Length: 520
Ligand code: BGC
Image (cartoon, rainbow, N blue to C red; front, side, top):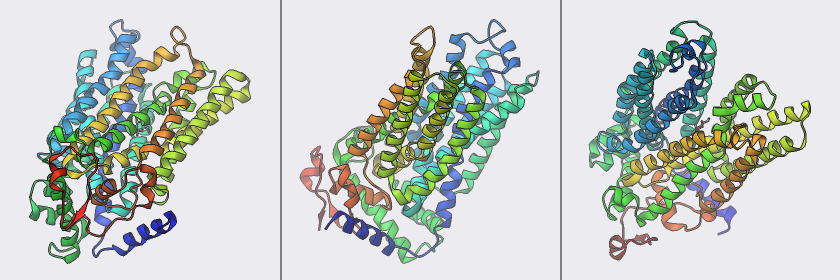
């Protein structure tokens, strides 16, 4: 069968699988959970503005004048430390109390406690403690949302639903910039307390909202709670618990899980095992998040204002422009996710980002006219547009759907931790590369980002499997059957792949890298 033929077959298999019931609830649940992105974006976006407020500068730093580099780097990077730890702790709640309770606890208790401490602070120590606690909450939330969304959304629109999480992140960053802008001139504690207190509202909305939504059926299956899994799926699909289509879907999830656990139950050892192609999948997830950070996107969001000012361009206007482009360009990403597919989106995005950054770098060294400044600004905006429509959402989509159920929560946590680790490393090291008294790279820094984006392209080509339109269980089947990522588009899922299949005895014992799926 040719590639084109098999793509058509994959399309028809999926259309043919249209089930009874409604998918509206499954979509609503995932889109609501995306709200957690607002907490993520707002919290990361708000601190630089707060630190620049005249009232804050006159009261918080030791010298009551300006933050020293030690104070400001501590205040900014302490959040990443909290998020990293939070992301790594998430599976302990996700795999015991469930995805839903993890979101409720982390938003209502952890994040809101951190936000309240920050709001109440009138000196540096309490503000820092508040940042750590809020960071823990953001870390927990950021590694649970893609997991929860992927396990509840209908497969034909799962990528678009998870992309809404990225959209919420961009809106959160934008809202933080707007609210800081609105309060920064107030000469009193309200200047920083208003933007910091508003976060509590986001925590309340997410926490109480999640209380009303169902746990994922896959979590219940992993706990052997089959009746609860049926109830949850019944709510998501709007079908009675004993409807044949619902029972069939449940049976597929259960069969795939039973197939997986023949390799061994969920444990950290299994997360790093080669069985089930787990290690290959884990390295794909960890590296896609690292590369998402190495695109250089946060260089613009964290250091853009000062960088553009030093290049003679109005930094505040550019910060506003890049924020608007970031929010707006995520929309085509959401719309294209299920049409173009993950692989093509990532390949196009990496190429587009690389070329636009190289243009910025070359313009920076060759000309210094007004026109060249406009070119610089325009191509920075084009770079952000490419990121927002491609690597921004797709890194989260891929991570949410990459793993088998028994190792999913732990693996997604490691991938999210990689995002935060690189986020921190780039935030920490960038001043050393660009500050005039240090590396003084200026626009040459875009040669580095452009170079990384070239590697993003190679990475996507070599490792990203096309998972558009497949159920999470069919993704398992895909990895079982296709050994090279660039051949994945021609994969056609079989109906009920894991029913009546068994791991060959030798494979279930050995640490085998590839496993034959044998139908009994
Ligand atoms: C990234 C963040 C980034 C944001 C920008 C997210 O997907 O993980 O680090 O600041 O996108 O929109």
